Image (tube, rainbow, N blue to C red):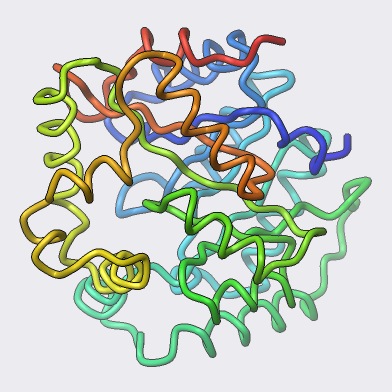
Length: 295
């Protein structure tokens, strides 16, 4: 399987942490039945993503699974290589390794680990992972390694030592900047949040609920400010700020946002449907069905 080609169609980004394992399997199967190419799953303080994805791979046939992202501070680089390579071999290369440095409040505050030099830590991690042995049956091709990257230096590293980048909470303008830094031959897998409603007030309230969990994280704030948003716009979740980050409106209006990312250089757009009139972690099937690839 040529994963680069496979990921050129639309994917889904979703938290399955609130689902029981059986429900997560049913969710993945339904995503696969809608012809999405990939399902991106994050790592926070819940399930181990590699164990969880192993279960989901065993219960699906075509869907690619990606960690979006696995925290490099949680595992030795050699152990991460073992896990990723095992999944790639067992599931016919349906696994993408997404890695990230996470955020200081989690790494230092919760895990009591050092977050002082995230770029240097990622460079060291990738180098050690590459040089670590893997002595079992290898997959037919190495799993893609994609980095969570927002700023120019991490994007440069994504092009230098990895297979591409996975920006989160960004805009088509950022996608164009990222493509310019990565060059033309690297994967650019962009996450796009969707509030599937034509009601402006509902869309903005949905976005504000989601943004409340992120606006105080420096990595995101710094990137939003690089994109031209002020501290005041970010703190007040201004309408201009929301509309730039969250796609909402008619089906055509939402789809146009995906087109803008692709025109700006995205290789793959993964949709994160937000909980409009629902609880966090509840799949918005109306959105996923309406936005599914026509393949």
